[in-house]
Image (cartoon, rainbow, N blue to C red):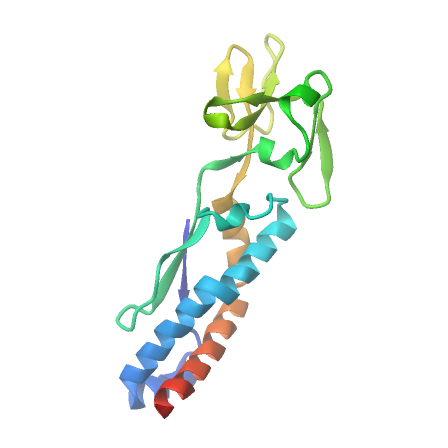
Length: 196
C-alpha cells in the first residue's frame, strides 16, 4: 500500500499560495518531505511497534520508506510499506532451531502478548535465514494461516502481518496528526524562505 502525505489547511493556507506561489510551493514541498522522512515517519514507526513487536531496526531497512518525495510541482510524498508477509520467526526472540524442537516456539507478535505455538519449531532456510515451521498430522488443516508456505507434505512455514498491513492501520489513524505536522512545518519554512 502507498499512502500520500499532502499539505492540509484548506482556505487558511490558500492566501500563501495566492500571494507568493513560488515560495509557498517550495515551503510546502520542504514541509511535506520533512514530515514524511523524519517527524511523521518516526511517529508512524512508533505506532507500528506499539501494535506489533517488530524486531529492532526492522522498519528502518527499506521495509517502510519514502518512495517518492514531494516537489514544488507535485505536493505529495509517497510512503510505501513492504507487502510481503513477515516471517513469524522474527517474533521468536532468543530462540533457535536447536532449542525449539519438541518444545514449541514462544512468540510475541502483538506487543506484550506472548503465546506458545506448541507444534511450531524453527528451521534453517536457504540464505542463512530462519523460518518458523509447523508439521500437521494427516488430515489436519491450518487455522489463521494467511501466507503460509508449504515446504513438504504437512510441513508449512508460517508468516505474520506484512509491514504494509500494519502501516495501513496506523497511517489512517494518524491522518489529522500528520496534517497538523505538515501545516506547522509549512508555516516555519514559509517564514524562513520569505525572509531571504
